[in-house]
Amino acid sequence: MDHIKFKYCVWCFKDISKVGFSREHIIPSSIGGLIYSDHILCTKCNNDFGTEIDSNALKHREIIELAHEFGLISDTSKYLTKSHDINIEAEGNTIKGYLKNGKVYPIPQQVSDDHIIVPDDITKETITKLVKRDNRLKHLSDSEKENEIEILLKKYAEIAHGNFIHSKKLGLLLKKGITGDKINFRSKSVNDPLVPLVLKIFYEWLSIIAYDDFFRSEKIFPALRESILSKEAKSGISVIRLEEKRDKRSFHCVIIEFDANSTICLISLFSKITYQVFAPPLELSFLDFHRKANKLDSLCGIHIEENFHDSKKTILFIDDSGKRINSNIEAN
Image 1 (spheres, rainbow, N blue to C red):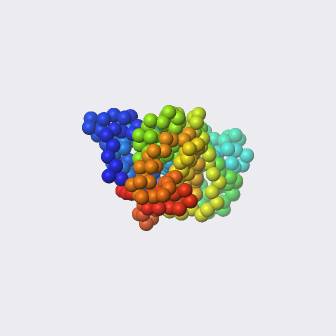
Image 2 (image 1 turned 30 degrees about the horizontal axis):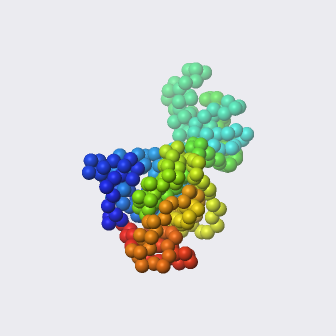
Image 3 (image 1 turned 90 degrees about the vertical axis):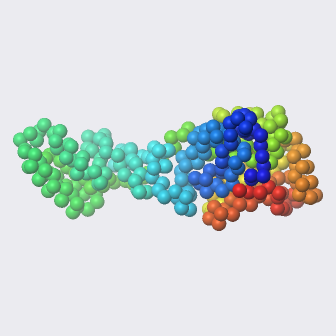
């Protein structure tokens, strides 16, 4: 959208000649967003949005899994581990876990009956530490301890999942695996991490489409701005998550419709995770401008799609009958 030239950052309103613009993907490129503008955010605001808002996309479990499924990220583990507490319900205990290569492992820990849970990939390391710290084994030389550990681990490797192996010399009882496989992912975020992103997407498209009518609004502009700053919907703004029954697909969609009573925005990520935002109405003179510029009989909204597999970007106007019409807004 390089043909849209703003003189001021649409967030801090500083003069661009003094602060400089930087490229802003309206939907983050990390989750397949294609449409960007080099002329709406200054460098500082762009960086702040990236850190405080855009990064939230990959803190949402469904987004993380869909981004991995569509090849946008290579491994879900680091994103889920950073953004979620992972617990395994096993043997009457709640065991803390972590993700590695898409598989959940228990973190080494002592549980209620004093036995220790250890993942297989660090069993030898953990047992070696336990043996070295055990004052009861001072009568054994280091080589004897190492030999007994090797014997124990060899037998451990041969037993079936759920069975025990005992070393009398080391005083250790090992059980292979844990019984129970209920895994719970609990987001570390108190609020839905996608709500600030949804609000930011809405704000930036209104800046591009309505510009002065949006910034001069006494209702929708301050309400949406306050909601973004607080990272939750404030007075005048309502955000709801819709139940989406369609199959997931490799595109994102934004639909904004305007009338005299309200402004409604529908944002669908991967055609599966859909939010609807209800906001106060705008002064609609900007619609007259777009209607005349595109020689349309009527105009009530805009429809944006970004297909990241086909690298296809589409921006359409919506007339009063619901028909989609090519717009004069070019997508970068």
